[in-house]
Length: 468
Image (tube, rainbow, N blue to C red; front, side, top):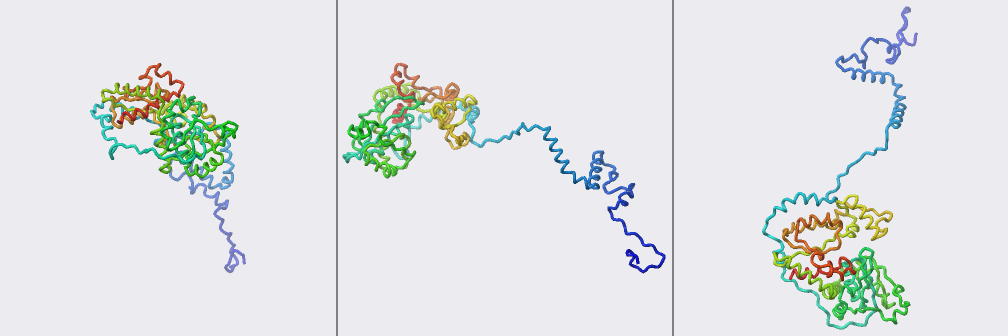
């Protein structure tokens, strides 16, 4: 029996071969004239491109061995592409800046300019802002001078007040508070000479020393120098005295726990630098001493008081239309302030170069340390950029001050003043400075003092006289 025939043989039958497999060459070549599964003849309505695509797919699917060469074809194509394409062009991805991260005040001013120019409102904030000085009643001083004597001193404290006049004044107030809290004798603070302000002034050049000592005599001892018998231990050289490098905004408890023991041991200590070295958060006894120094003891020297009173009187005459009332504005848009803030305004490339140079002059290496990252957008979002003259003008107009308001501008040399001051002058034409109110001869004695001294010195006086 033939292995392919499972029925009994009749003797004359011939065994039939098995059916050819579907992939047999016999079937593959048979029926070439018939329309195959992927034949392009099917669907005669197709376009030539579609028919060509069908033919290509048909060849691939029928000749599956082609797929073995697909990776080689792909790699060859990529190598050919990489050899002809240029990778020097990097795609530019534009990121939309976060809200509030870009200086756009000039655009805002352009939109509001017509409305501000056409505003003929009779209501002026300058006529009402002094009407209600304080909702709880009238202002009353909270500083009371002590009438008791002082115990024996624990030693002498010498501080170096660094920074501008604002920081120096704060340092004096903090030094009074620390000395009083530690029951120490304060040596007149030394004003540190800075490469930015280049001010060689001493304490007595700016403040009334005698008045300062007499005002504090029942709260803090103040002397002009340390006794010689103590300085002999240090070779009569202050640099040999132990210097505390105190962190910024240290608590008063730190002075009690760390500084006081050394003071009791050495009898003389030095703290340098001292700007911002005491926390604002302090017990009432410390705040009392701060206020006593700032509002009572620190009186400007006679020459500064005289010129300051003259400027106030002249400003009142210029403000006759408003009953002698005016606004004093201390702009903080000097070059050093703009540079230190690391903010970006609308000065473009020139501004960027100016700020880099100013930072290097004033704080050599501070802003170029390895790992230091400056993010101007984040700084602006956090509200740490100084207000431009334009923004100050917009704020004042928003508060209700009209263009007839007289303004005394207290500041140093404004950065790029010709451009930045123009919008403020447009909003407030009646704007005056110490240079427009006083002659060169009157200001000449103060040229050796810092160029912003007169601005700082007259500002508290102006505020006091306006509000009374």
